[in-house]
Image 1 (cartoon, rainbow, N blue to C red):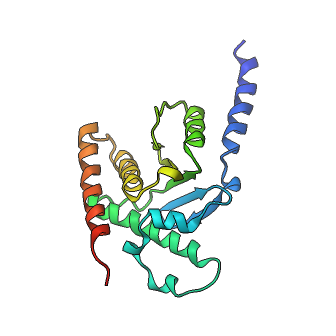
Image 2: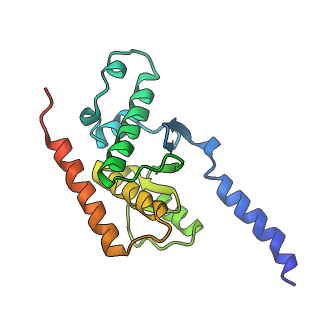
Length: 185
């Protein structure tokens, strides 16, 4: 009896996950992160939301061409990841985090439903080493909070209690805010 439902369930899960496959998203790669965005995503808006000037890379700013924004985004994401790793003193060189930037909260809700999670109006969530975040609510603070949560939960064999994780994420957010508030020359 259960065998007759197994194949349709397997096909449904495969088709459901393939709708969010890596092929249907634009890919931004860095050493420790894979970031997938939707077709037509505004890269410059994403860079602005991540305060890329705090992670300014002169070699990519002065390069012209269509891929310079992509290179700048990859390097900015890598710098954010490394900054968070340094703040937490968690250096997981074998770890890899996948971030999905979705166009809005409706798509985020659909993804959460597919993963059997209840968001209740949240703008981001994580599952394992995957982070799902809505572009309309993306900020550097929110992004760093989700990355911190994933790093902490996947680094330790037994993750610390939720209050300790929140305190560590608050520490990261405080330092990221200080970093983005400083004046650039």
